[in-house]
Length: 138
Image (tube, rainbow, N blue to C red):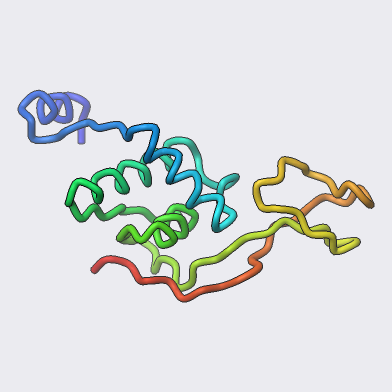
């Protein structure tokens, strides 16, 4: 959609530009931490999930249209419907963990370290648990 058409749609009330409240942004952050995707999703991604949570609390049934697996993972954890556009989407919700490939020490997924405190090897990310996804919206 061109900028002019978008602006016209906003001015006519056809399109509404909304921002989530801080309460729902905190909730979205907690869902992203729960699955270990807090380092994978951007602030805008979190705002999108937060807005969907807020709209759901108002009685709407929001659907997030995205091919981003991290957003789908967080949306699935939050119980929000999502739809893939060009990919098949997630089949399992993944819970991520950071680990050291050398000494096998595990770190929380939102850990800011890049290197192992014990041996100095670069940390890697892997799924620690898989749960069948609720499924994408049809």
